[in-house]
Image (cartoon, rainbow, N blue to C red; front, top):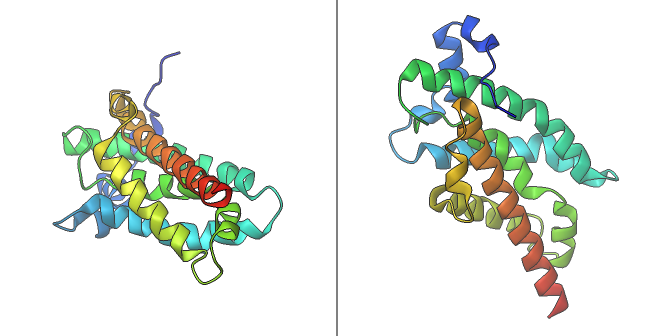
Length: 179
């Protein structure tokens, strides 16, 4: 199966594509744009996805609500890459923003393991830091995912970093509870 870059963003004005891809001025900050995009993604998670944690099947809801945003990120980030003329430009941070909620799939389970004074913010800080580590270092084959074409390569490596973060958080919670 060949992954193709969606064509519909080609018809959007460059100013709109770049504004979405960089989250307006957030991605244009001089230092660490990916960190700023991740911080914005954490805010996005806490406003839109954190309340879902109180529903049954919250991880499934988070995943289902994230999928349209991830597709949008693939389309917009790929088009922004083409218009900027550089492979995975640093100022394009919509990928970090949209992937961040996946770090916290099943977060209520994590929050219950920690002492009441630490949860849920300790989970969010740990998730943010782990996500940045995995996004920068790109271990476990994550680096190879960048070779996917267009926006797929830009977004899927961040999705993998988010899922690796989620796995580490859940493993740490299990270890904390077991030992």
